[in-house]
Image (cartoon, rainbow, N blue to C red):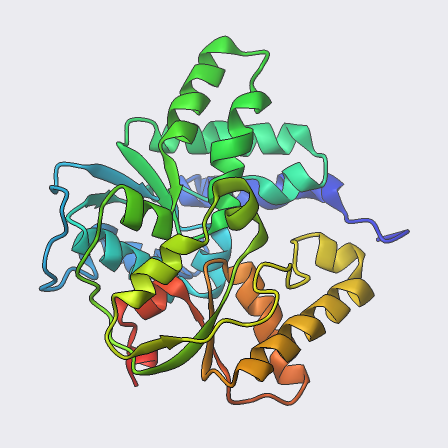
Amino acid sequence: MHGGGLPWRRLPSQIEAPIRQREGDAQAGARAPVGLDRFRASGAPAAGLLTSAIPPGRITRTMRVGLFVTCLVDLMRPSIGFAALRLLEAAGCDVVVPATQTCCGQPAYNAGDRAVTRALARKLVREFDGCDAVVAPSGSCAAMIRVHYPALFDDEPAMRAAAERVAGDTYELTDFLVNVARLENIPGRYDGTLTYHDSCAGLRELGVQAQPRALLARMPGVVITEMRESTTCCGFGGTFSVKFGDLSAHMADNKCAHIAQTGAAAIVAGDLGCLLNIEGRLRRRGDLHTRVWHIAEVLAGDDDVCR
């Protein structure tokens, strides 16, 4: 790595290998299953693993929803994927989780690598085309698909049409639960204070702000204590935090200070990248007590949250 740049020339092979492995290419070699793959390896359908006796929402199970787990959730915190799955099932959706899904292409897109971005976008569109909706527990990934995919294929009319179909039906999780599924009965339980961080892409590209708060407000015992500058970036920004580490750390420090000022027991957000960045900075500052949760984990009643 030179001049603060990233080794994007190696990215195609880094992406191609997990794709080949997930599609069963023997030449790619076996790998130990990680994340959601640990459960796929058992042969059980992913959409049934977290099924529980949850009251159905206001839509019927005939709505076929594709869950785009996101690569970060799959590899770093798969509990978020299963929490999202549980919430979609609570809303009465028939959930499908394409086993070959990988990355939406956002890192390559932000780095200017159009070829890799198009390859990943083409793959995702084909995997989810035919779903009534595509839902992601990430505003940044959902925005990548919904806002940026169609223009990637301006030179391919048929592919652009397919990308427009998928993009038009793609939602961030809380936006879908509030505005499409109309979920009223929240399965999770939490008694205590929390504060909410508005992730940049979800807020600015998708208008996600009131939706997570509306869902949290339906949970008995939840007290939302708003932080100062909740809509200000936490400093992550994907490749931004790598290219501009000092500036990113300063922004994260500001965010952590605002969290501390609320006195809330937990910080909640809708993007795992933000949460990893915030939690890392909290711990480096000596805060070992503030809990850091994804909105899906709180709403679904993840065991760690309920304790």
